[in-house]
Amino acid sequence: MRSLIGRKAPHFEATAVVNGKDIVSDFSLEQYIGKKYVIFFFYPMDFTFVCPTELHAFQEKLAEFEKRNVAVVGCSVDSEYSHYSWLQMPKKEGGIQGVTYPIVSDFSKSISEKFGVLAGCYKPDDSGEWVCDGAPVAYRGLFLIDKEGNVRHCVINDLPLGRSVDEAIRVVDALQHFEEYGEVCPANWSKGKDAMKGSTDGVADYLSHH
Image 1 (cartoon, rainbow, N blue to C red):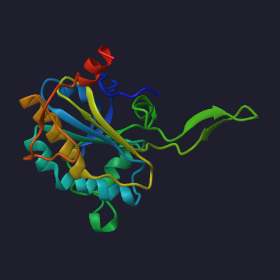
Image 2 (cartoon, helix red, strand yellow; image 1 turned 180 degrees about the vertical axis):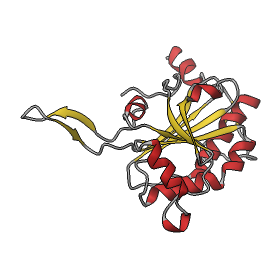
Image 3 (spheres, rainbow, N blue to C red; image 1 turned 30 degrees about the horizontal axis):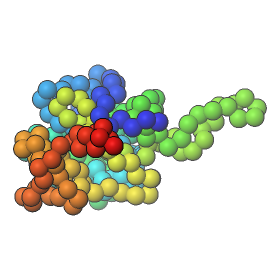
Image 4 (tube, rainbow, N blue to C red; image 1 turned 45 degrees about the vertical axis):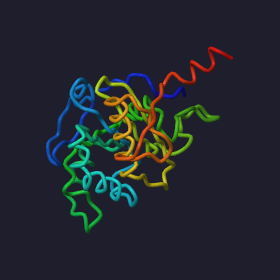
């Protein structure tokens, strides 16, 4: 599948649980266009082991995202009812009680498919029965979407590999630094360090002269 970088984030309308308790039937990322950046992340399933560590980690840093004008939105292939139940379960019991950012239900798996993170695909076997080749859940995908609705960064981890929330914040900082100052951010850059004068068209300029 072609990378989504530089392209509009795929459109969807789906059911989500927001504020840890409210079920919304027509949730869309397009509500943030012109208003906020979005960190949209996928996780495999509710009621698992690595997933709650990630969801709580995003909640713990939610204020850091909010002061950068970033909305955090999670998504998995579970139903809104599964999300709701998990949100009512205390953290010490393996639940995600206390998470307030929206969690989207991709029960049809169509959103995961659009974003290129579905770990399995359905196809007919030798007898004509439709079976899933691979796991019918989402990989740990994360997408940074700018205020125009364009995907500017993505990372996709295999199922056993949890993500770094601090890295997601660092990339937000890099994008916002570039937008404000026109400076590009070198390897291992973090907020407060020197960036570089340069053009994102540098590669294109080089190729046009060679």
